View 1 (cartoon, rainbow, N blue to C red):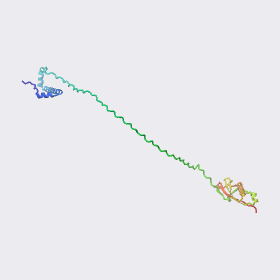
View 2 (cartoon, rainbow, N blue to C red; view 1 turned 180 degrees about the vertical axis):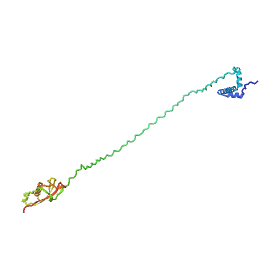
View 3 (cartoon, rainbow, N blue to C red; view 1 turned 90 degrees about the horizontal axis):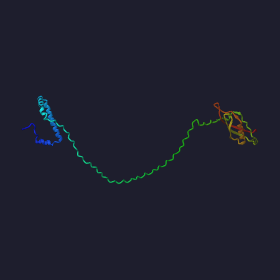
Length: 231
């Protein structure tokens, strides 16, 4: 006598045994979900719904509620014993030999050449500090000499006794005041007494100062002094 449920074949049983626990649970859940969907689809038909309602009291005690799926137990990874690493001490290496660095040779700098001392040039005198050269005296001919007090010649007595005669040329400088300056013999008469008498007479004379552009200036002149005895 055949029942409504088909028994699985040996091949299917072998395939089912080859599945893991998780795959088996997933397959059971899929079959159960397919039955639920098929049941829901049948309930959409009015005739089937009415038949199911009538048969509910019969199957209520036969269908057990589905058991909730238990989560698979967590897979335990076998703990490996912790092995401390083996430390192999290396043989100490010999200390390096000290490196001796020779000191660099001392560099002796040549002495610096002596610095030449250059005296700064003297500043050029400014025009204000440069003294102006004195004006050159005006040369006056003897004929143009004007006297305020004429020359009075005194004949030396000893020269008269010795009959000394001659002409003495006296050089003199007449200043702006008309006074004789720098009186000297420019040409001698041959007698020292006559030359001295001529210079003494010229020093006692007074002259009118020479002029230039209406202003008195100094002048140089030569005055002859004649010593002659009466015949």
